[in-house]
Image (cartoon, rainbow, N blue to C red; front, side):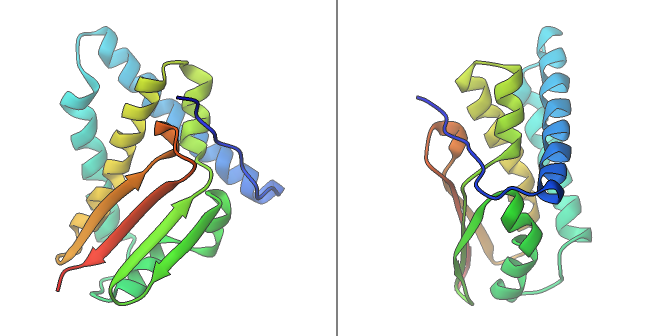
Length: 163
């Protein structure tokens, strides 16, 4: 597998946000790497910590709504669309589907480890943040369909509303 992760959108403001996200991803990597050196497996605690963070954000940073379109617009703000080179594929009452064409987290992890399996696992753990956000919306379900970290061209996720 070869990870493809090249940003299209470039300007100084967007690059500064990407750099901040890369910095946080480096923290995540180094914390998990040090824990692993001490005999702790990433999944033993990393997933729950990131899921907890996502739940917190779902409670505090996202609108209290049952409207999928309102949720989708809060999830994919204009600024974040540029940071992650996102394309919103669908945003209506039934589903919100978005494709990320670039990921600053993956960019960071690629600088710190050449182990693509580790990058794939780090990505999936990081996605627990989004899973945690969605958990705060009863009736919404999260489906991660592809990821840049797995060698796919895009990260594609769909959030649907139960009927």
